[in-house]
Length: 313
Length: 313
Image (cartoon, rainbow over all chains, first blue to last red; front, side, top):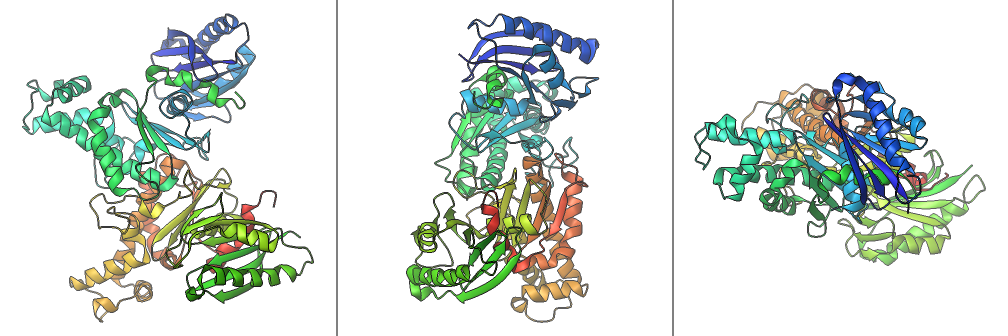
């Protein structure tokens, strides 16, 4: 059986695993990313843990390669982590090359939203599709694109910044410098902010605390209990996602979209409006034929995507 | 010298030519498309004219293949013209196969906006770029995508419907059934409609006729003479194109955009606002590093694109 190693490098934790060629996670491990150790210390720990996993591979065969996912600006072809907002001190680190030398295997470095999309494509909600977009709804809104059965990263390694599609030209300022980006409406941060603002305006709701005490988790609970304000927040999220999907499907003629990330916990609440907006607007595809799906792999998606970077897996 | 045949099938005229491998048009011809002759009659004329051109190829060598561009819904892989709004009676015509048999050569059938983009990429304003979008501003707004150095048509042969990106969610109704599409602002039709509406509202302008008598050509002339109303129309066009480019570049990380079609005659008037909107909003690319360019090949673009459908040209 062909196996691969995967590592998902976050700002506080690194998760790693041994993965079969269809994206099935066979073994798992994790370690704390203590930023005071700096890149060199953290890379040392990666190497030690991955070597142990490599050498203990239960099938007896050595894993054929490693894929590392990280948040930030990455040059996949060069294997360089240019900049990572959650990893202070990491600048232009040739991570793939260092790991490849130490582990004696082919190593790919990709953006974590890209790797999540590859995982859902290989083993999750996007399986079987040649052309697919993945959304991650978290603190921000990220994404990945599979085009023609391959990860597409564009000319500068930076494609699929779908959180920064313009939805409302005169909307709220976004951290990127623009206004009205999808992220200003459909990230977990934005959902909570919208609800707090509506509470502060005095809209009625079952939530009786101070607006600033409302969290995303509370908002999801409120929706489950039928709270009208919470449901209207997700109606707005569905509207924005439906507009984004309309433009993406019209531009790319995709077969499907997978929606994951922490705030996709509210999928059932924003799905109806998202689907309705898409169906009433889209032109280049038949809205009944394309697949809209919630991500199914949860935290495993990045590990599951590891084999997808290897041709002939 | 390697040569190819190209044919651009319009609703009233068909233009064809002999094309060198770098997209240089060596010989040209045309015939009237009389729809009363039906698909069979028109295909007969195509075959006769293309055979004559094939056999007269001045280099002595036989052209290596033919690419046909047509407006409408096309299945490029199957070579089938599914439906063409300007060609009554054409439904599911296996055009590539029929021409291939009659001419004894490889034949590709592609959407005309795709073929225009291939032409500008091979021999025009988009040359040298691996990832590129082409816009055509005409009666509607069409487009094409080159991704990874190849034409990208998506899962259903229908990608690059960039005229139907949503710019203003609550904007004007579009023929596609949505609202606020790019086409409702940036097509020649929309430019003229905007100007007529503003005239009818009594906005001041050098144009003294009845609003309904204003044409696109007049509008371009007015802009050249500094008419404020005309310049504001193109300001709005530049705003919409800048928003569309922002979302496209954020999604695809492209290196450039080429803007052609009849209404690109106003390029100099909408460029400043288009560039400003893009520069102030885009995130995934450096606005100073990407190429924004007016198409350079004019009516030859579709013929010039013919060799681009052949690998190893």
